[in-house]
Length: 123
Image: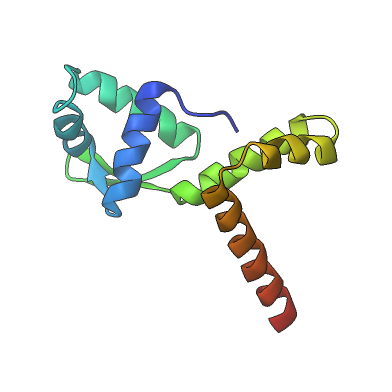
């Protein structure tokens, strides 16, 4: 899984945050608040995201409506797992990662680990 390009990320951020199906026109209008961009450019990138498996689509009249296939958090977790696998020595990679965490990030990590431990005990 590759990380997203700038426009891909901007599109996915919108689709993830809306939590509803979105047309190319919906995304285009929102993107145009920040930049000048063509309909065909947004359509092409959304089609690419569909082909990559990040968006699913279905027909709605003459156009497609898109929605994410996974949450933003699940996508980020997959990227993190891929980076860990590619980092060589996983223990050393994790040490470097942990050394860079802010106190708030470390707290979130500890809470996540506690949740996983509770889930494991309940199964």
